[in-house]
Image 1 (cartoon, rainbow, N blue to C red):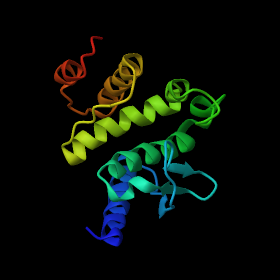
Image 2 (cartoon, helix red, strand yellow; image 1 turned 180 degrees about the horizontal axis):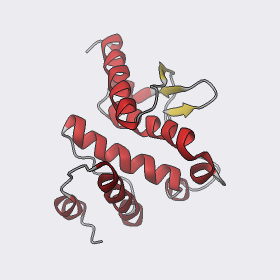
Image 3 (cartoon, rainbow, N blue to C red; image 1 turned 120 degrees about the horizontal axis):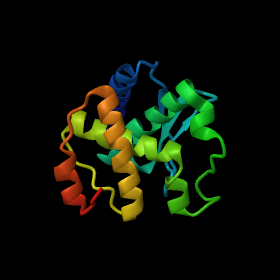
Image 4 (cartoon, rainbow, N blue to C red; image 1 turned 30 degrees about the vertical axis):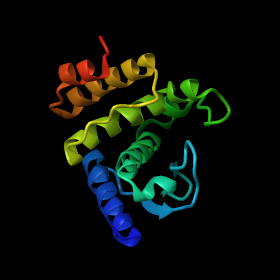
Length: 161
């Protein structure tokens, strides 16, 4: 798939997810950047920057994750970002254990399943991180009336809640 076509699909996906959340879609821009945190939401420009993974299926998960960050900024900035620490200033596990990241990961897992019919395994996450994300997924699924096979998902992840 050509890069331009891939970016267009990501933009359309971001619009769909934004509509689901009842927010305006942020701009999507490609910015060559690799490593952890290569995608991010910039609230000052209302832009999601997508990095090296833009050419992969992971880009869909990342787009949803970053659109959810926009939703967090719009709905309850203080709750999600009071005391927030950027990646690189704390350990990776501490970074991913922040409420803003747990919420964005949980939402991205649900939307990836709902829109793409794909299961996110959260490879590289500790069991504690997975448990926190799954608990938040359950809350989000209830809030939005999303059907999700949590028992099967937990079994696949070898997580007991």
